[in-house]
Amino acid sequence: MLRRSTNTLGYSHALRTAHSSDTDYPDITGLTVVIPCYNEVDNLEHSYAEIVSELGDLDLELLYVDDGSTDGSLDVIRRLAESDSRVQYVSFTRNFGFEAAFSAGYRYASKPWLLHVDADQQFPAAEAHKLIAAAKAGYDAVFGVRTNRQDPVLRRWGTAAFHFIGRKLLRIELPQGATAFRLVRTELARRIVDLELGTPYFLATVPRLTSRYTTVPVAHRARARGKSKVGMSFLSSHAIELFVGFSRRLSTAASVSCVVAGGAGLMTALAGATGLLSGEALDTAVLLLLTVSLAASALAVRSLVVVGAGQPRPRQFYVREASIPVSAADRLFNPTPSLEST
Ligand code: UDP
Ligand code: MG
Image (tube, rainbow, N blue to C red):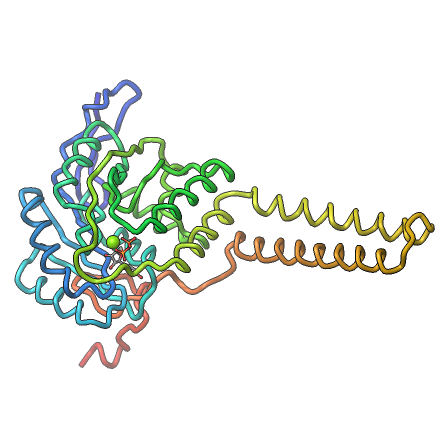
């Protein structure tokens, strides 16, 4: 059985009762395609044409998030918006990174569902139909999993290590193999963005809000134009934020090693003082070693706590220009009253 309601955004959605079957979910008609882009000038028109030809039958919005591009991407996006009323955009004051870019898209998507598609066509738009079919079975989020990932071997190994450490060692709930190619209820995605976590990580936050998520195998292509914008240093620091922000195991291990090193240092000092240990050079070396490891552990704990506790940081992104209304808090420059009235 289903009850239907209309939320504040004016679209109707189904509220499940305990006994509803999975096929009771409504059709996914209204869809915002969120396209984060950073210096993708050569890809934008190809990707637009592909999305429109595959998904144009739906009630579609294409929401481009220009993440501070410097290569003329914004000019292309403006042109697309002029020629197609389904195209909207927000443009950042600088490059804020991938997580910030799609988060802005999720916040300002206007349709009840959103589909995240990278601008470089690595995920074929046609694969979205698989995600849509899965969502209709009753999921709040469906993640594409690359069956034949077409990225350099180092990236593939890095992702495997990331999932192993995150899922197995640190026991963080992450949808296995999930990627950014995903279909999500906009209400859920917006909730996650609005949490404004100190260490935002969308993949790991979805399972904290709902158990109705799943993964679907999808095809993957090599990048045809332009370079990957996501470097190893970004990926590793983003992974560390996940490990620290979504699990206590790392900080616990650092605290334990701190205590163990401190205890061993004390015992060595006592043994030296009572004459149990001889050999001055040996004593000094051992004490030095222990002092260093103690200091290192203390530093590790400090940095983990600072990062893990969400040290105050600037907002995730700021918008300079947009084709849609954007909240004042998300803009860096707001029109002054005197300018507004002229
Ligand atoms: N991207 C972005 N901001 C960034 C880096 C990337 O908006 O700082 C966009 C990029 O333009 C692309 C998507 O995020 O549309 C995925 O980036 P990329 O293809 O470089 O990542 P990869 O596929 O190599 O993981
Ligand atoms: Mg890519």
